[in-house]
Structures are given as structure tokens and as C-alpha cells.
Image (cartoon, rainbow, N blue to C red; front, top):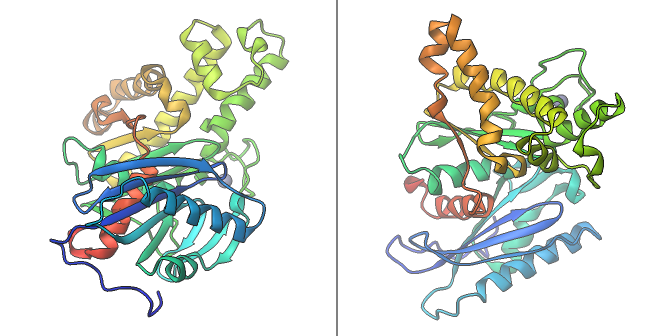
Length: 335
Ligand SMILES: [Zn+2]
């Protein structure tokens, strides 16, 4: 941070927090007040034409977000951002964000120079985990894991009310846990990482492999073939699609067992596009846990289906979590 940062407001003041979820396709924002009440949300396309153009598109999105509510009694107090990839949260530098073409990019310094308020960044899935903890947590659980299933798979963990980061900001990177040493190659260079078997990308690859065997399936009519399409086809009774969905769920259930045993969480929350299939997504996971319960007292004690749930699909938990991160930057003892 630079000397141009204004003094943080006292906890009784009125102010704005802006949360930003930066993705390779879109930038989503939310405007919250000091009590974390929403005053507007926005989604714009990410400008990837150059690293600085990406920054300018984020600056513009933040300015448009502040214009969503003209309340003259409030001014901007802090900005939080969730960024894909590896972040140096202390120095405010985006270490590696492949999709954004940012490498050692001094994002916080640039934003502080523009807005003059504290700005904080963290990995997008960890930020979304904070969003789940603060805004999608009706039971007020202090120990939870959030699994984001998309083109890859990543996990965020809250333990005793604190977001785990780890020495290299890699805590909870379960997507690169090797579960099949002879499995498909992973972007990380290894083989058979969890995300090569159960991510949305993996669902599509499994579907292509089954179709190549000549099985009759409604999936042949899908153009493009998407993971969501596979889940819809499974729900409609397509047998190859059901095979894929069940195989993915079984595999994921085994790895979620490791998450539960590693962290002893109250709740495992699943989010991301494919999880919107809801009950059809959870069913094979629950089935595998119940199978494990039949022969294991340990499984009966810890793999209880009621601890599984799908994240609220109506709320942009990445942007909301980023606003919560901004709030923590202002008043660390409240986080
Ligand atoms: Zn990997």
C-alpha cells in the first residue's frame, strides 16, 4: 500500500465496500454498505487485450458500481478482489493469473493509486469460500470447505472461522491431489489429478470417450457438448450420461472423504456451473458415502450426507466474498 491511502473509517461510519470477482470472461462486482447490505451488482466483459487493458476494465467496472447508488453520505472505503491463480496477498501482487495474462502484476499498487483506499486481493476460490462463510451459512458454521467445480477444481477451507491460506497461498489445492497415477495428464504436469477426473472439463472428456465407443446417446445432438448438457441428459434418462455422472460423483465422493478427514469440517459446500444440477449432482456422491458407511464405523461417524450442500446459485459468492475481504481489511478484528 502507498501513502496515498486514506485513513480507514471508524466502525460506526457509513461507507461503501466494493467486491470484485475477476474471471477470464467476466468481471462481476457488488456494492455493499458498512453493514454488508447490497446496493447493486454488475457484470461486464473482461478486456483481455493487454494486462493494462484488463486493469482499466476493472477500474471502469468499479466506477460503474459506485454509480449504482448515489447516496451522498457514503464514500468508498475499501475494495476487495478475487483473482484466479496464485496471489501474493501481503504485497498485493498477482503472481500468476494465466487466463488474465498477469504475471507479477502490481494490482494493488495500481488500484490504490487510482482510488486512494485500501485494496486487497486473494485467490478467487478462497474469496468465494469467504463469501459462503459470511453470506451462505444459515447455521453459522465455523468450519467448512467449499469446492469450486469448473474447468478445474479448487477448494477453500474455513477452520475455526478463519480462511486458510498456507505458506504459498496454496492451502486446499485438492484439485491437484493425484488420485490415479495412470490417469489423464493435468495442466500442472502430473497425471490423474482429481480435477482431470471430476471437473467440468473432465465430464466433457468422459462424454467424448463414451461417444467414440459408438454408444447411442442424446449427447450426440449437443453442440457444443457441455458438462451442464451431460447433467441435463442424465436427469432426462440418457444412460451414457448417467454413467458419466455416477462415475464422476463416486470419484468425487472418495476425495471429499479426504477433505472431511483432513479438516474435520461441519459442512462441505459445492459450487460452480455443474453443481446447479442440484440433487442429480449430489445423488451419486451420497450413494458412495452410504456405500462406505456399510462397512465402516468411521464413515458412519463422519461421512454424513447432511453435511453436503450446493452453494446458493443466485448469489455471486465470489464478488460478495471479495467485499467481505475488503471489510476485513478495514477492521481486521471483526473478520
Ligand atoms: Zn494437477
